[in-house]
Amino acid sequence: MAESAQTPAFRELVSAFARIGCLSFGGPAGQVALMHREIVEERRWLTEDQFLNALNFCHLLPGPEAQQLATWIGWRLHGWRGGLAAGLLFILPGAMVILALTLAYVLAAQATWFAALFLGVKAAVLAIVLQALIRIGGRALDTPLRQGLAGAAFLALFVLDLPFPWVVGIAAVLGALVARVRPSWLGLSPPTDGGAKAASPWAASVRSILVWGLIWGAPMAAVFLAVGPDHVLWKIGVFFSQLAVVTFGGAYAVLAYMAQEAVQGFGWLSTPEMADGLGLAETTPGPLIMVTQFVGFLAAYRAPEPFTPLVAGLLGAGLTTWVTFAPCFLWIFSLAPWIERLQASAFLRGALSALTAAVVGAIASLSLWFALHVLFAQVGTLQAGPLRLPAPETASLDSRAAILTIVALALVFGLKWGVLRVLASCAVGGLLLLILS
Image 1 (cartoon, rainbow, N blue to C red):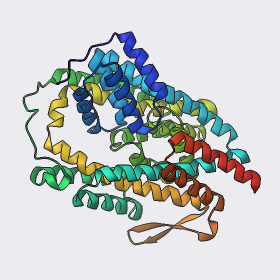
Image 2 (cartoon, one colour; image 1 turned 120 degrees about the vertical axis):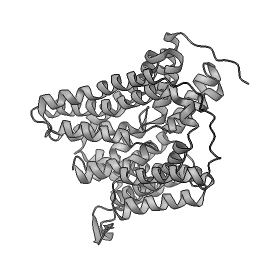
Image 3 (cartoon, one colour; image 1 turned 180 degrees about the horizontal axis):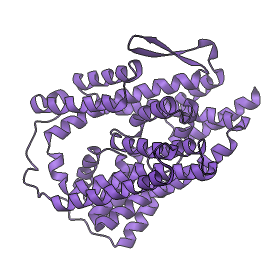
Image 4 (tube, rainbow, N blue to C red; image 1 turned 180 degrees about the vertical axis):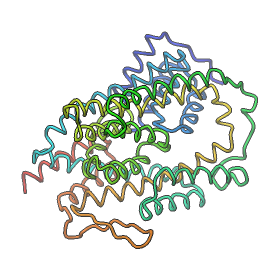
């Protein structure tokens, strides 16, 4: 058994997570690997078992699992102040970078060269999302039931246009029920009661829920009093607060729901702009769900009254980031003391297993939805009863987008390049096609 890990000084924890926050590119897999190397292998602040148990625990929670893992590590080593330091340092570098990129995007969006550059970025994003689909599907769809859940989720989202929360909610309930009687259908071992005798820290959990519930809601109260419930800032806060509760399965999964609502429901931005935002988020450190900040900025920037567009955009970005990540601290600080019981629950394990399968279907829906809107200039809707199918105009196929998408697929699947190299290469490719046209 591994030796007990050593507890670092608080300043050492801060230094380590400042470094991790600046280097955490590559999505959740790369971010978790980076933390494992820095915290377990090099510094030996946690044992292998502690790290893996915490990672499994974070998979049970809504929100970005890598950021929650960082928060848990800080909490484990230095209590709530360690959790705050680690969690904030994990997200702040990426938040500042994507805010700067969003400002540049708004200022240069009408330039021809900028549109060509981002055509390449969107082509790269298609390949990257498809890669995520294959990777997650390969791990998650290991039983016929989970494969069926993924297929059903895809049809529900892409063909029936059902709301994302309903789809994943039904999958989670079904998984919880199946886990009670046939856990093998979900690839689970039989349920155990290994955590039944763990301590029940009710007081600490209730205190954390109250404190972080107030912290989560404080900006929303200020917005309500300042501009009222009809203002775009209030709508932004409510929407992304709801999103923070249903973001199981990572950013790619919830993007389908966010895109559906932000583009089709609220009309805050267009489908190509949504793809641009995902491209910006792919180039920055920190959680990919930081793309929400881009959406919040544009939504407020375009309906700024009584503020100037820039001030409104900054307020929208700040509010979005707050209500997206404040819940992560609530989950960790209130539920971390229950880690043994949560991991031993057959009910929760079954719900998570089925939910993960449904997430694969959601990512497939997102992939096809993005592909159609990037490759075709005009995409209508074919409706027959409850069916709602996107119907692209074949004559509107963008040949440059098609070429760049083929290049991106070759770089990702053929040469197996990393995210940043693919994004940069396709962006340059977009500029070259503009020059040659």
